[in-house]
Length: 160
Image (cartoon, rainbow, N blue to C red; front, side):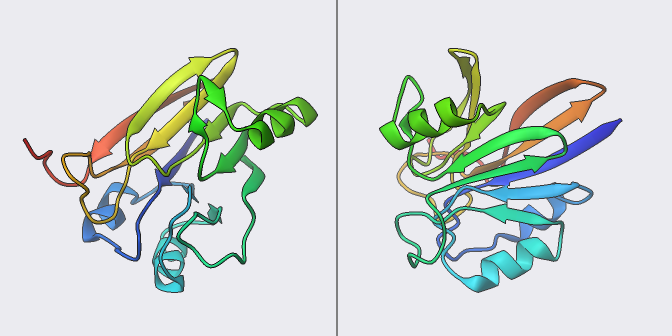
């Protein structure tokens, strides 16, 4: 069985046209915060079912930590981690309360994909306006059989 999740963060109100083509055919989308407006959520929902968390630049109407089962993957979604090697106390407490297979986060605008202390951490980087030389990308999590994999996909060429 194959299941694909589009992972996006830090759109800051920008819906890049490349996102629709990269996420075409995904089974679900996860947004890790700093959304920037309802129009972003509406555009993503038009592609696939959406789970999202508020970011520090969003209106404080959503949750800081969201848990969801997405395609059999136990997801803990937060915007500010800030460091996978030393997660925020609220994230550590949430993981102790109920384990997760993956922690998806944003905020730093930097790609991250690693397993630390038995937990998989993934940051797609930013899909919004470019900041400095940081990547503009999204992620795809893919399940084939029982195994999950992840990759980053650049939406625009990296600056030098």
